[in-house]
Length: 101
Image (cartoon, rainbow, N blue to C red):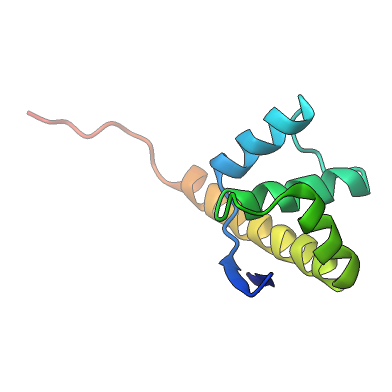
C-alpha cells in the first residue's frame, strides 16, 4: 500500500518495527479494537518509513483523507489473511528431522 503524505510517497509494509513503535507509543500490543488504535498503528507504519512526519501532521492529513484509514485497514486485513495461509501451509510441511549423516 502506498500513501502520499505532504508530497512524499510512503510504501507501507507491515513490519515488526511498526509493531514496536505502536507498543512504545501506547504501552500495549495492537489489537485493532478501537479507532484510535487503528489510527496510531497506521501512524506507526508511516513513521517507520518517514520519521519526519509528526503525529499532528499525520492526523491533519488523515482528516483531509479519511478514506485512507479504511484503505489501510483493508490492506492490513489482506496482509493477515495471506500470512495466515502461509502459516497453515508451513504447519502442513513434514517436520521430520533430516538425517545429516
